[in-house]
Length: 341
Ligand code: HEC
Ligand code: HEC
Ligand code: HEC
Ligand code: HEC
Ligand code: HEC
Ligand code: HEC
Ligand code: HEC
Ligand code: HEC
Ligand code: HEC
Ligand code: HEC
Ligand code: HEC
Ligand code: HEC
Image (cartoon, rainbow, N blue to C red; front, side):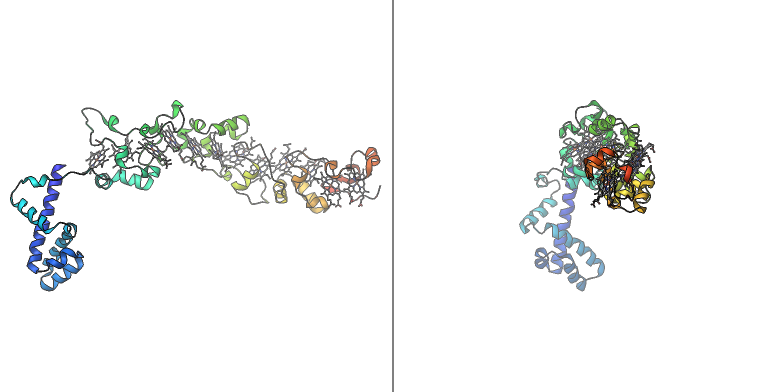
């Protein structure tokens, strides 16, 4: 490390020295030291010299940019120092800790992992996690010991169940903590630990879906939402339905707890399985034809009685004589044309 710093410094000094020589040679020191733009400088130089010299001068002018803050006095001192090899002034520096930019010069892989898939770990600097680094000693087998521990910053994010304590079993690369998760099928036993409510709900309301693995539907990657059409046909092709529309009636984790809004557009969905009633209402137009099926069938397979909507329109006496309204009116889907009683 020290050697690297020393040779850098030397290179800088060489640059400064030759720069001074070149500029004194062309007599344009004043301008360039205070006005760095390299292009300008090289133009001036080209006029007076060959192209190869111009190139060199450009390079040196660039060096001048970085060192232009160094005062003339200091420069002189440095020149003296260089004339005496091994002079102590070379060590009159206080080394600064490596910055992120320094780390990533050598650790491109980790840098790119964090850059593209670091998620919220992008907000954490290398050394916040790596409080120790460059301390691996194969003789001591201390790799694990010096590597950061998740518990430095995270405390039971998934609870205390022993099955979710081995962080790196799932977050396989700390530099890309989310995309390095295993395929859902490999976590199938753990879903219920983190999604306890859903697992419990499915158990409580048995259905064909509860017989499936969570990862049969949430396949490919964690959190993926499947489409119903991956496994089902539309039972009511009169209506174009995507997953969103199916979910209106079927809560997917408890698909038999069917509920639907009171909306006439849904009639065509019912028609997929009850075409007889649907067609009767349509062909034989009465005021019932303008109703949503759900008005009379608010839940699947149940129905309201005529009286719940109509009361006793012909009085108590008639109702007593003919307790069933359908004796005269026929089917609610296909009301008879009756004449006055
Ligand atoms: C959120 C914490 C965290 C951050 C931020 C982080 N690292 Fe790491 N890094 C780790 C952990 C944990 C390991 C050990 C992985 C293992 O066990 O294989 C590791 C391993 C490494 C390794 C060893 C890789 C190998 O193949 O042996 C290098 C090199 C490294 N990190 C460099 C960096 C650099 C450079 C940065 C910043 C750009 C950085 N890390 C940021 C947590 C972090
Ligand atoms: C001049 C190049 C260089 C720089 C700069 C550098 N490293 Fe390294 N680092 C290496 C080399 C070489 C290894 C050993 C080979 C390997 O594991 O990639 C290493 C290994 C590591 C390791 C794993 C082994 C261990 O002993 O810790 C970590 C972690 C690490 N570096 C972190 C960092 C961090 C953090 C920074 C910035 C603060 C940094 N490095 C800056 C070259 C560098
Ligand atoms: C130096 C502290 C530190 C260490 C060590 C650390 N993390 Fe983090 N981690 C954070 C911070 C900060 C966040 C962002 C928290 C937030 O904003 O909610 C985070 C977020 C995460 C996230 C969520 C990322 C996202 O974008 O939602 C995961 C997953 C994660 N860490 C896993 C790990 C694992 C696994 C380890 C051990 C290998 C680890 N972390 C070590 C500081 C750390
Ligand atoms: C069985 C696999 C598994 C294990 C083991 C595991 N995680 Fe996770 N972790 C996940 C999944 C899946 C997510 C959700 C990721 C998402 O948001 O898509 C997650 C999310 C996170 C998050 C961000 C969301 C939150 O709840 O705050 C953090 C932080 C995190 N994990 C840290 C850890 C740490 C620390 C450990 C070790 C104690 C650990 N994880 C162990 C699978 C796991
Ligand atoms: C270690 C804990 C953990 C495990 C194990 C886990 N998850 Fe998650 N999961 C989470 C967390 C935390 C979130 C919330 C992430 C968010 O809000 O962005 C989440 C979110 C989800 C989501 C919702 C995504 C969205 O877009 O809203 C689904 C779906 C999901 N997980 C399914 C599963 C399945 C299936 C399994 C098993 C294969 C599983 N999870 C295993 C922690 C876990
Ligand atoms: C038949 C396929 C299927 C099965 C099996 C299934 N899911 Fe889902 N899951 C879905 C669909 C579709 C959604 C989107 C639901 C929505 O948007 O209303 C979803 C949403 C989720 C969500 C995020 C939304 C929420 O309700 O919080 C989580 C978490 C989740 N499922 C976890 C699980 C877990 C855990 C299991 C196993 C116990 C499981 N799922 C089984 C299809 C399924
Ligand atoms: C991974 C495949 C898969 C996906 C995705 C899926 N299902 Fe299923 N579903 C099944 C299987 C398998 C059955 C049982 C056999 C059958 O009825 O086809 C079933 C049965 C059902 C049942 C009858 C439940 C019972 O217990 O009889 C309903 C309702 C249902 N699914 C609705 C949906 C809806 C709505 C979606 C989308 C939100 C969906 N399914 C997504 C596989 C799936
Ligand atoms: C208007 C409400 C409604 C909508 C929207 C709806 N369904 Fe249904 N679905 C039902 C009813 C009611 C049943 C019959 C349940 C029974 O047999 O008791 C049913 C039954 C099912 C069944 C059981 C097997 C079968 O075919 O008989 C599956 C699977 C199913 N639906 C999938 C879907 C899918 C996929 C979608 C979206 C394309 C969807 N459903 C949209 C109401 C609806
Ligand atoms: C004005 C109220 C009303 C409307 C609107 C209505 N129904 Fe009915 N439905 C009933 C009543 C009342 C019964 C029970 C009487 C009977 O058995 O004839 C019934 C019975 C049924 C039955 C059981 C089979 C049968 O014929 O006995 C099915 C299936 C049915 N309706 C489907 C539908 C569908 C599908 C729609 C919409 C297209 C619909 N209904 C609209 C009132 C209605
Ligand atoms: C996927 C096919 C399917 C769809 C869609 C469907 N049903 Fe059904 N329906 C059935 C089956 C199968 C039965 C008989 C089994 C039962 O009682 O659950 C039934 C029974 C009924 C009954 C009671 C029949 C009786 O004899 O008592 C009514 C009322 C009914 N459905 C109304 C509706 C309405 C209203 C809709 C639309 C919101 C609808 N159904 C959508 C399949 C379906
Ligand atoms: C959900 C409530 C509801 C139920 C249940 C119901 N109806 Fe109706 N019915 C209506 C409505 C609303 C009208 C239209 C009233 C109006 O526009 O004045 C109507 C109209 C009628 C009419 C006049 C039809 C016309 O086209 O002029 C008859 C007859 C009738 N209902 C008979 C019945 C019989 C019989 C039953 C039981 C089998 C029944 N209704 C069940 C709501 C209902
Ligand atoms: C003995 C036969 C008979 C019985 C039983 C009967 N109705 Fe009627 N209902 C009629 C006749 C006839 C009309 C007049 C038809 C017309 O005006 O076109 C009528 C008309 C109606 C109307 C339409 C009223 C209007 O103002 O347009 C409704 C609603 C109705 N009945 C509901 C019922 C209900 C509900 C029951 C059972 C409680 C019932 N009816 C029982 C014969 C009967």
